[in-house]
Length: 458
Image (cartoon, rainbow, N blue to C red; front, top):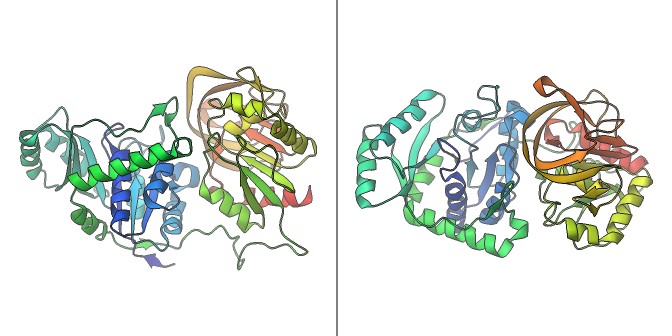
């Protein structure tokens, strides 16, 4: 085991809506503009913020989720993403101490900060307070002695006098003010039913949004002091995570030619994916080929397996339905018994129809938009054998959708959900594994190796 000196900051807040994303993304872009190689990270299962982080830094945005992957993988995954970087910025989730419901500190920003031994910058919405800000910051700084609040960035400050009152109050709390952002028109980052609109759907406008965040942060924050705080972080103990199987010198290369070609859906309709998934597939010997179901009318030549992750097929249902040649190609691939792994949006795409529009028809299931938000972590077990997991495989996942499928599970379900929400969910049908559950394969690398092997032999 080695210790790696990676300067780093965790950007947190007392609650959601305080300005974490604006500050974290702005800091990433501002430091990158100074010539630093910045490693971007996001606490929790969120797929959308990392897209903005990647735009700000030019590097892959990565998630750090102690529920999905386990606390023991947080430092290794961080070091994997931060390899070769000058500085890392980690955007928190919800309030600093909020984590998985009923699980104490598990999956909270505070837990990740402690696991990374990283100083925390607290973003405080100061719009409706003055002296009370000192009590708020003091409470957050003293609640857990293992969490080091290294400074505060005050957001939505109304005037010079308001700033003066806030600074006077915080002098008594002993926490330095590292930035003051004035009350202004919010940076334009449009939202819809599941949060921000992903970068892939608005790249030019998103580039402008990130530039505006960087300008706001550069004008209002002491970047030199923030960089100095990041450099106070001690080395991160442990070794970087690797997608290469233990005991291997490199990716698996089967004798007699290249590995199986696995098509991975992308583009505006399918933006939800963890970078580690394609890294694991490649390390297991696959040739990973991305494609866009909105634009391409056939699967990549020689496709032996298909991965369709999450995203917004409900937004693009008309366009996906209109691409009849690709829908037919996916149905033909499934009928051949080839392995297909589909999560959430991928599940909807494989259905017979979505909001009345024909989809691939791989599953005799209908899907529709609803008003109900399904959200939360899940503890799951594979009910039977599939191309993705052997029966009894335990994985933790996350659900986040406003759609419903009927029926909710097939004769051979994908997962049994444990705990209070006991039920079966999803579909296993020949080579198909389809489910609402988002999983992080780094927690169980064997699923990627199993999937690639099934692609090789099917």
